[in-house]
Image (cartoon, rainbow, N blue to C red):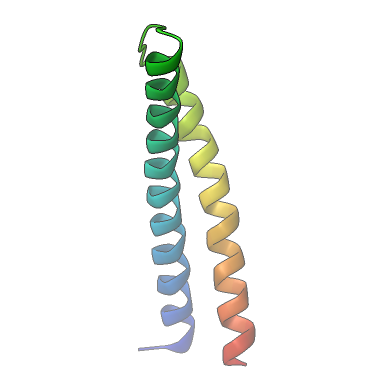
Length: 79
C-alpha cells in the first residue's frame, strides 16, 4: 500500500477509536456520578437524552482532537 494511504487509514482508525472510547468513558463517569448521588443523597437516577447529547458532542470533539494529536505524534516519530 501507499504510505499516504497507510497514514490516512491510521488517522481514521485512531480518531474513531478515540471517539468511541471517550464516549464510553463519558457514559461510565456520568453513571458512576449518578449512582453516588443516588446512594448518598437519595436523589432520582435520571438518564436524560440531553445529557446523552452533551456526552456525544464532547466525545466527538475530544476524540477528534486526541485522534489528530496521536496521529501527529506517530507521524513525527516515523519521520
